[in-house]
Image 1 (tube, rainbow, N blue to C red):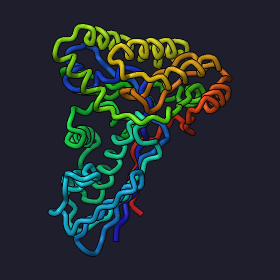
Image 2 (cartoon, helix red, strand yellow; image 1 turned 135 degrees about the vertical axis):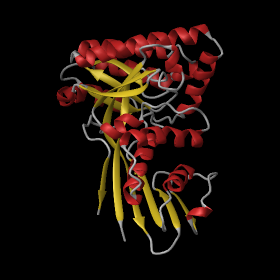
Image 3 (tube, rainbow, N blue to C red; image 1 turned 30 degrees about the vertical axis):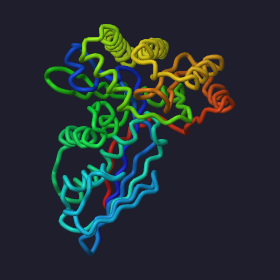
Image 4 (cartoon, rainbow, N blue to C red; image 1 turned 180 degrees about the horizontal axis):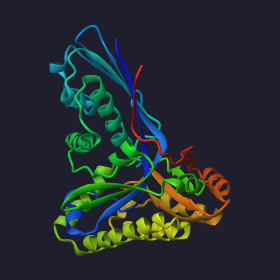
Length: 334
């Protein structure tokens, strides 16, 4: 029996989200997204079996599916994401797959994407398929797009593989990853708070509506995304300069323009938590992912992290014990 365990971090996105949906970035030269890996890990365990059965288990949704063989896998069930990855890698015998993610469902932290990378990494190792990280980064959004039935952005997979703070450059030549300010990670972590609103979101819905309006020529949507592109470049410069004030300024403006993309991006709960955090020492905040719920990330002033965390908790927010991490995808055979 073989047992492979893989973990991948989720992420907070700091600037440039939605532009990572192909082909939107082709209409905004110089597009990039900036994000940071956090230690709310997605974990996958794959164990070989003596028979041909494929057993899929998700601890997050409490779902278990059993198939007599790989050929019997179905792609119209709650665990189709796992089934599609198993079908792609094609293990020679039976296996049991067990998955879990520390990030809450619908948190906007890229949990499903981190889960895809963890399972792809485990199956790649188990089967000896030999795919490189760069090849897995192409595979992952393709698989997830089949599941969510709308275009999947590419930014979430990179922190899951590389960890740390990332700039994902998007252009006609393809997608290029750059690691940023690794030595600044511990210090920045002391100024970041991640809070769940208690409301789940589905990123594909908001992003798809924005995507359609952009393609159909809505000038307001195009202008807002152009401004978000510019602010992502400001965020990139701020992180490279290790300038917390500039990071906060870019984050604040990114949130201002992101709210203009769709009415559903913000909610009364999000706005209330934003106000509470600012009154307690937050310099800026923005929703993670496509909005409409999920998590909000805040950049806070020196020494004010405990104050902001306490105020958010008192206001009904769910402050996550989340920290920036340099650790990316790890695969271990037991």
